[in-house]
Image (cartoon, rainbow, N blue to C red):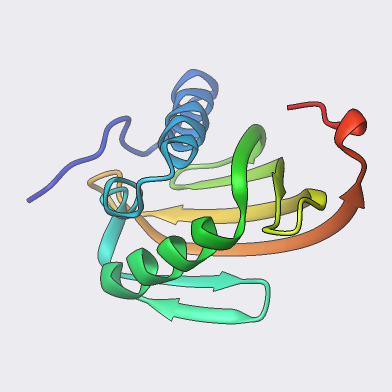
Length: 136
């Protein structure tokens, strides 16, 4: 069985590491690599989109990063318990027309015993910004 350390139950140290590893993976903008952190039947809610499984995750992320250019993400641990982690995040990107955005949001994650995320629920808001307002 695949494993994705650190494994639950989480401590402050391992939850913080799990969040950093997720941030690092997402910033590669490699959908196949990112999908390996999730169970093969992982459930997602991303805004109003509902996904199930790695194939749907890969397709979703591929389309996302084709539209969200120069994407850069920062995640922060908000809370954790045995096999759950809550994060807040922000990311910046621009569209094909050159308009920059900063997205803010929260995610709730649930992991299986092998450290793979089986559920991800994300609430996200986008704010148009000027290029000189970028922080990331």
